[in-house]
Amino acid sequence: MAYEQTEIDKIFNTICENISSKGYSLRKCLLDENMPSSRTFFIWLDEDQEKVKQYACACEDRHERIADEIIDISDAIENDVTINAEGLEITNYNVIQRDRLRTDSRKWLLGKLSPKKYGDSSLLKIADNDGNSFKVNAIFTTDLLYVPTDDSTSKDS
Image 1 (spheres, one colour):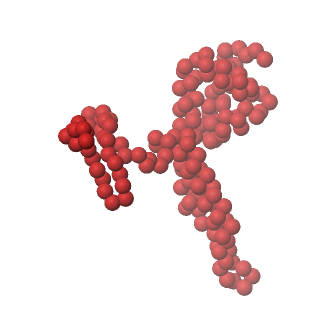
Image 2 (tube, rainbow, N blue to C red):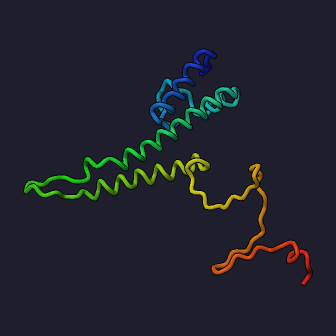
């Protein structure tokens, strides 16, 4: 199907708005029969760098929305405890476990989609005062950290 440029812009804006404000995935946005195929969508991206920026911003907004959802799910306690017929409080562990799964899934996804912002950093990053990184040769053992000096690395044994 051929699209006019104004129609492409309108459809693209709608897709980005659904991603940004509703947190939809691209796949979910394109499920509607009035939407283009994913192939067509990515062709549009290839043809216009402004659309790439717009789509990237929409995705970043979605990541922020997912981070907010993690807080909302974690803070929600409405269904954690119920009162039975005898008036006793009963903890609903199924709800608690499902909420844990929901938050863990979102945390994992954010760590993959935005690793610099939401990922677990297990790397030691060393830089000078200007922010330039440099290489440190070190050997880590369970009991000892050995950092070779210029003298120890230049001598032949």
